[in-house]
Amino acid sequence: MCTATHPATDCHGNVNAVLTIDRTIVDAIVAHARRDHPDEACGVVAGAIGSDVPSRHLPMDNAARSMTFYEFDSMEQLRVWREMDDLDEEPVVIYHSHTATEAFPSRTDISFAGEPNAHYLLVSTREPDSEEIRSFRIVDGVVAEEEVNIVDATVKA
Amino acid sequence: MAIEVRIPTILRNYTGGAKVVEGAGDTLTALIDDLDGKHSGLKGRLITAEGGLHRFVNIYVNDEDVRFLGALDAKLKDGDSITILPAVAGGALGFAAAAAFLGR
Image (cartoon, rainbow over all chains, first blue to last red; front, side):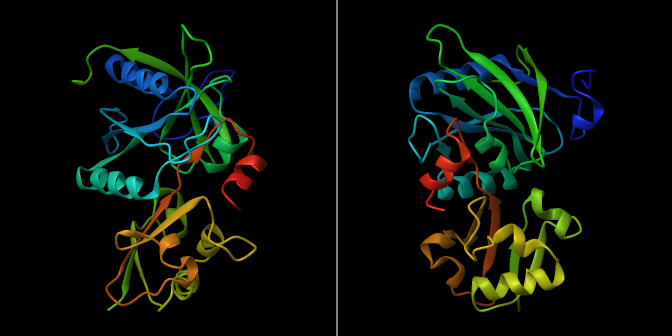
């Protein structure tokens, strides 16, 4: 929602500022982030174009294999982006983990953010027992945090 | 015949919303110059002020990343299909360090 703390001018896209995502997908993203910790993990959740429903979890390799940087492998990305195109899907969520800092976009994240329709989901794995999960729209260098609404059974895992 | 170029969402404001445009040129540099003539401003989003390929985009000739084909010198021919995608990268690392990491 575009609230007082997130004025309408900070809200982008054709949806309210909320990411609604199935718990099974969030669990799979967290498991991926934990598995790759202390390196950053990254991936995509695809969904039907215009639906704003993230339905197909696609963990990606972090080609940088770094604790402070992630980068999709360009050839894997081409394959996945073509597959989404063939299925009339788009990247509804682009996620990555921060492994020693908070789940907030860095200057680097903002500079690279190139999918104006995507929800940028960040997971912090700095605490061993709990994860911080936050979501943002990043358009033209402007960051707007949005609510994360985790629901049960919008999709089959 | 011409070269088909697939444009990502973030650059479609330069192409009037078109997902696919056509261009011509026997190298990637020539193609980008041709495209910029029709879609003014596109070049600046693909090539840095220093004249290199921008790190924020990936460009593919058919099924290959142009970085493996000579980058801007990559040879093109009629019927080739070019795909432009935003590079997906980021992380907690500061931007200057990230740029150095990527060898920019």
